[in-house]
Amino acid sequence: MLGRFKSILLKQWDKFVPVSVVKSNGKVPWMSYKAVKLVRKKHRVFSKYKDKDHLACKRASKVASCEVKKAKYNFERKLAENIKKDTKSFYGYVKGRAKAGRSRSIGLLVNDQNVVVDSAEEMSQEFNKFFSSVFTKERTGEVPEANWVYKENSNGLNDIDITKEKVSAKLDKLRDDKAAGADDLLPRFLNSIKKEIISPIVMLFKKVLREETVPNHWRDANVVPIF
Image (cartoon, rainbow, N blue to C red):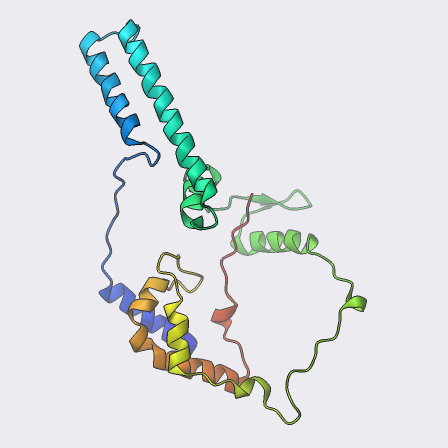
C-alpha cells in the first residue's frame, strides 16, 4: 500500500511540477561593494596604461587584491559565527569549496584480500563491514532495565490516536529547504499537497500499527561515507 501511495505521488510530481534550470549568476558570495569597486578600478587603470608592470597598475592591483582577501575573510568569519543559527549556508559554502563535496559518487574499493570491488552491493557490504567494526561495543551486563510504561491488559502502541490534526502539525514542521530522502519526495512538495495527502497518511499509519509491520520503504536511507 505504501509503495503504491509513493508511486502515485511521484507520478503526479512528474506530471504537474514544472522543472526549471537555475543558472549561476557568476557572482562571488564574499565580494563586498568596496571590493567590487576596487576591482573595477583596477581594470580601468590597466585599460589606460596597457602595462601590468606600470606603477599605477601595480598599486591598483595590490589595493584590490587586499580588499578582496579582506572581504573573503569577513564573509567566512561571519559564516562560522552564525553556524548555529544558519547551518545550511555554512555547509553549502564548505561543500562548494571542497573537492570531495563536488561528487557523491564512490569509486572502486579494495577489500581486505586486495580484491577490487566494483558492484554497488559489494561496495555497500564493505562499507557496512567497516562501519560495524568501529561501533561502540556496549557492556550488556550493565544495561539498566527499562521501566514498563503500560499498565496490565494494555494494548500498548495500538492505543495511539493518529488524527488528521497531528499529521498536519507534523507536515507543517517539514523544512522546505531540505532535500529529498531515500523516497525522492521533497518536503516542499509534500507541504504543497498537505490537504490532499493527510487522509491517506492517517490510513497508512493506522494500517502499520494494526498489522504490526514496518514497510520496507521506511527502512531505506541514504548513507554517504565521509572520506
